[in-house]
Each structure stands twice: as structure tokens, then as C-alpha cells.
Length: 542
Ligand SMILES: Nc1ncnc2c1ncn2[C@@H]1O[C@H](COP(=O)(O)OP(=O)(O)OP(=O)(O)O)[C@@H](O)[C@H]1O
Ligand SMILES: [Mg+2]
Image (cartoon, rainbow, N blue to C red):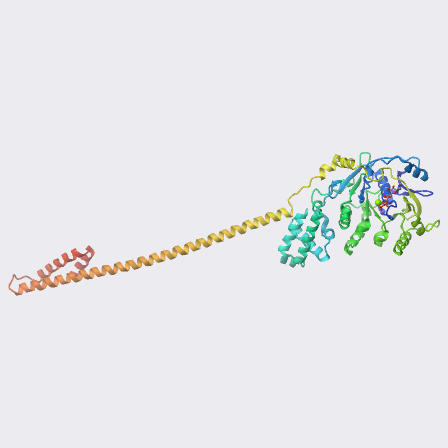
């Protein structure tokens, strides 16, 4: 409960307060199942909201939605309040917003592939280090080409592109093996089959929308419905880590403030570290260490603190330890470790107290004004002012529908990104290849036709030449025959005239004989031939 500008969380023989100025030094809520962790988280969240600090909570069991309703006035509640000596306890609802990665019981939460980055995506898809390295190259290739990776379609298209241009990218960035590309493709397929596809895309969650305060200045309580998400523990842990990383990266440095800018509760936090590669654990440690100076407090909720690496535990200064069982040696070890994290209170044994605590009871230690952990106290946690357990589902759905962010986030938008651009580029390439193939085919056909025409022309020329030769031969023969006939006719005429002249006929001069013979030859030629032949003969006679 928020009172005197402090968070009154628990009551021993004194009131135990979490100081707003120390709330960004992170915290841990631990304890076995059913011991009161969720209720403690609720009480803290309510107080932060009352002081105007927005809160983010992951709802793993679906029992947080009651925060949008006032608590029930019951005998049980009065019994508890009497025991704690609390008489002024207003039951009230809280400004609550519901979010859901799958968009079922809250506004859809989307992230773009590039915002998530190769490291977290590699974890999400369960890739090996080598495969994550290839994913890294895919991201760089997209960057180099100015291509946006928004949704899984984009990633798939880009992966295929890098796979097809493997040789080039191997030279540039390192080995891109077909085996790795194939493994990533298969992992993507598996992820899509689990409906993971819808969480990637736009509109991407704007973290400022989680940092709003309501009309009365109370911080919004943002509840991420994680019931379905937690069924894939790695996916759940990766998404929450992405959210934390986003907050870390997007928020400016502010140092220590009077009160935090936002509080982030991470339920089932041990999942973050289960089978996490070393590099990722390092990243978590770094984010947790540094996010404090951005005014964000992170509270890990888990059954056993021993599931959280020491380096991270060391950062969690405000602690609420609920009961732990100590039957097996490993449970006893966990109890010892949990007890060892507190400053001893000489009034009781921390180790023993942990195993004796009742439901809603806890060992509590917060940082004091000086930032020093207070001595551990055994105390009862205050009840929440809002409803314990879930609210009516229809009421929640109504709240979601009426909320201003429903309009902003419900519909996904698919703007032009790597997939669309690569599809276009491929279509353009295919079109150009088709054009080139057609042009080449046309060129071949033309060459063929030209060659055929040339061959036909050659044949024609040869035929004409042959014809001309034949014609010439024929004409030559005609001339020859004409000449022969003319010559014969001259000889006959000359010899006849000579006979006449010798046998006492009229005496004729030789020139007259020749002229007559020529005239006879001419008539002979005229009968058989052309004028050119005549000219030829005339020429030869002169
Ligand atoms: N501070 C409290 N005031 C009133 N009732 C409480 C308180 N803490 C716990 N309870 C009661 O105990 C029940 C179980 O507590 P809670 O759900 O917080 O346990 P949990 O540790 O979160 O369990 P799980 O690990 O199963 O999630 C609550 O439903 C509530 O009835
Ligand atoms: Mg719980």
C-alpha cells in the first residue's frame, strides 16, 4: 500500500517500507509454489501505480487480471487486516492494460525481426552458435542492401538470397554453409507452425505506451498475458528479455531519481537462464546492471533464487523470500543459499525461518536511505487492494476493446520490406532473363534466315552463270554455223563464177564475184541469224 510516499509492503512488529528512491536497485521475490509470490508482486505493483510509476507484469497463470477490479470485502481479508493492525484499507481497482503476444487476451505485441536482432532470434529459434553466426550475416546483408527485416517473410527471403549468393557472402563475412542455411530455414518453419509468425511485424510496440500514467496520475499496470507464451519457455524468456533490452536501449540515462520511471516484473525469471548460452547470460547481466541508471527497476520472481546466476542475484537488492521446502539435500542447499543472501537478524535463524513461513508471510530486506540492505525481518505481506485472482473474462475483453491502444495495435501493417523488394527484384531479373532469351532466339533465327537467303542467292547466281555460259556457247555455235554456211556459200559462188568465166560465159571481174558471194552469204546469214551476226560478218568481210 502506498502511504507516506513510501511502499508499505509488509508488517512485522514494525512497518516495512520499500523506498521509491531505492526501487530502481532491483529486487527478488522468491518462494515455493503457493506461498504468496504473485500476491506480493501485486501489492508492489499497486503501490508503484499509486505513486505514478507505470508497471509491467508478465501474467504466467492468468491470475493478475483481477487488478482491474477492486478487492473483495471478505472475512478473510478483515482477519488479515486485524492481525496486521491495519484499519484504513481502501479496496480499489487500478488502471490496467492488457497485452498479448498472440493478440488473444490483450493488444497485440509485435516486434520487428531487425529490432529483435540475431542474438535473441537465434535463441528464439533454438539455433546453434554457428547458425546464429549465419543469421548475423543475413542481418548484415540486409543492412548493406538497405533492406528492412520486419517480419518472418522478410527473414526467409533474405536468408534465401544470402544462401543463393553464398560464395560472395562467405568471402565477405565468413562461412555461410548450406547446412546452416537449411537448419535456420527448418527452425523458422517450426517457429511458424507454432504460430510464432504473427508476433513479428508492424506496428511494433512503442515502449512509451507502457510508460503512461492514467487520468488521476496513477501509473498504468501493463499486464502481458503469458499463459500461452509460457508453453514455450524459451520463447517466453526471449520475448521478455527483448522487452527489457528495448527499454534499456531506448530510454535515456537519468541516474538515480526520486522514484523510478518504470518497474518491470519478470515472473518465472529462472527461464531466462535455462540453457542460455554464455554470451546471452553476459548480456542479461549487463542489461540488469545498467538499466538502473535509466530509471527502470527489475524485479525477478522465481521459485528458487539458486536458479539465477550469482552475478545477477548480486544486482537484486530488495528481497522478499517466501517459504521454501527443505526435504531433499538440494532443497536444503537452496535454503542455505537463500538465507545467506540476507543480513542476519539476531532475533531469529534466517535458515530456519525460511522453512517455517506461512502463506503470505516472508523474509524481507530492502535498501535503506543510504542504499544499505536492512537487517532481515520476518513479516506478513499486506493484502492487495484490488481483486486477488482473475477478473471476469468478458470484462477484460471489454476493457481491451475500449482501450485507445486497441485501434493502434490490433491490425498488422505489411509495408514494403525485404520480402517485397526481393520478390520484385527476382521478377525483374526473371523478366530481363526472359527478354534476353527471346532476343537471343530472334537473333539466331535471323542469322539462320540470312544464311539460307545467302545460300539461295549463291545457288541462283551459279545457275545464272551456268545459263549464261550455256547461252554463250549456244550463240557461239550459231555464229560458227552461220560463218561456216557463209563461207561455204562464198566458195560455191566463187567456184561457180569461176567455172562460168572459164567456160566462155560472160567475163566477170573478181571483185564482182566476191560481192555476189558476199551478198549470197548475207542472205544465208539473214535466214539463220541476228543482226549482230550480220555486223560481225560484214566487219570480217571488209
Ligand atoms: N499477502 C497476502 N494476502 C492475502 N492473501 C494472500 C497473500 N499472499 C498469498 N495469499 C493467498 O495465497 C494464495 C496463493 O498465493 P500466490 O498465488 O501469490 O502464490 P504464488 O507463490 O504466486 O504461487 P505460484 O508459485 O503457484 O504462482 C493467494 O491466492 C491468496 O489467497
Ligand atoms: Mg504465482
